[in-house]
Length: 452
Image 1 (cartoon, rainbow, N blue to C red):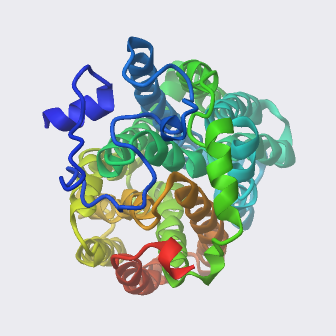
Image 2 (cartoon, one colour):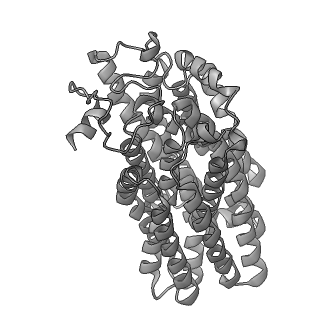
């Protein structure tokens, strides 16, 4: 829609200012504290950068949009590329199945440990600066880990990259809420679509790129650092803007909400954290182990990588459409149920006929994995202000990723000790049931500020 394009691209047209008008993405909370069509901080009389409505301000919005897309493209290849080359990495570093399972759990651990510091860093330095630094950390970690020497060095360099991903994961929903308060669904959809695209490209291209670079898995993994380096460039501009979503001018608003807002007393925050944790468990098991499931069923390594790419590619269009649809719904429970049923059907297929129906199961798992953009959308909808979204995003992602830690590790251990995929797949399917339940509870029309 033209109205959405105006908000995203920052053209000369102004959005409607009628307070009774319903935004395209759903109802805007009357206490949101954001003035539509103006950058965050402008309502306080201290603009975050160029004056609202000027050509400079519109260019900042364009650059910010490009930065969101590029950041999303680079946030998942460090993880997905490893899944495509897991067998080669295990052989090259001498890993056991249990240690490889630990490696697939490292992302969730780093996201929980480093993500909780993101709101405090954003108040100190500005969200744009922190995201920019996070992208630099991703580039350095991805480039260094294949050559760090041994399993310990690989894990340490991976932790650097994952720390950058963690702070970006938490703060990008804050940036979206602050700069596009009445377009949370649209911008979350754009961000999620690019995230899914980056995930899919890494899954599809890592194996052939490795062959092009001489057949070494080390160069195949390190090559993705180039994309991360490119993603830093627009955020250098964003970081220069005062108060770019939780910068100095927005920091006061964040600090005033800290005392009364006790996030842990909100039932919705807990339901959303549980939902996020269970969908993260499923996603990281899929990214880390699905290629191996297909390879053990007789599928070639190249085809297994393409199947994972298909699973991720399904999320590209759906991740754009789903947040926009969910933002228009008063209750996101029906979407949660639909995604969960697709996941259960995919797991059943992997158990009964992993090779014969591989393409169908990859498609179903791809639909199920769209619980992630749905969770991001609900984070933006369950809080009134950008400050509230920051606290909720940090809480949900840190608690959720901590809860997801045992899943990939347990799958690796079950696979090693049982010698097959029956028990691991049964575990994955069993976890989908509580994911549906807590997702329905998290999808109710609530605001954490009202509960906490």
